[in-house]
Length: 276
Image (cartoon, rainbow, N blue to C red):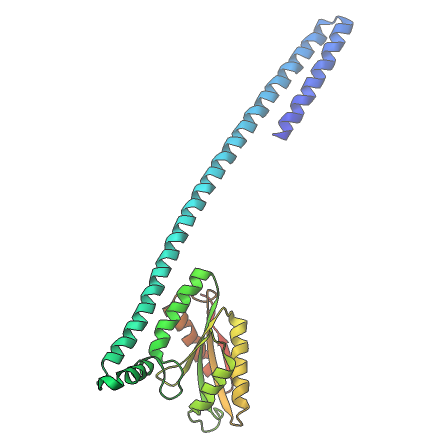
């Protein structure tokens, strides 16, 4: 478009000069050249104007299309946020209902119903050996934490720990559950969740934590265990939202796979999941 503009100016200038020369010399040929140059300048200017109009129209159409796309994306984001809020409310309701159902199943005189029901609800949601949260609580908490993370656009780390007392080259036994639970309580924040799974492993749900923060947390747990004076081997598998997975089943599968890779080492080992 700029080239057409420069050509139009050049032709117009030459036409003006030819016209002056024709007037000064009274030469018909010079007048004819001036007229031709003026006609060329006019055509070039018209083409330049048409090109500018076409470009402006195309830009306007592109802006309108982009505005429509952004409006649709915003509408979908609002629908997803509403669905996530409803899902969190359902999960919280399910947790309360499960605790109430367990409490209702415990018989006893009315005078003891309050404390007895409380113990029943705690037994459902906590591990009897360590006092940490149970696997049943972990299943609900992981999904709720991921839903909240999606809503707030914050990271969440899932850590699976397999801990044995001793070294893999020696005879290993199950670790002292009190030592492990104490190490976890000394390490984790109030916003984090520590659970003991039914198979004896431990699961940590770390709020607002990317993978390097999860690694630091595991190292602190390992340090606290070392301070007990008993040798332990700590294997850990880490998977993070949204870096490695987007839902509960996917992040759990990624963490399980990372833990299997860590266990292949005859020493302390942390393995991080990889995004597919």
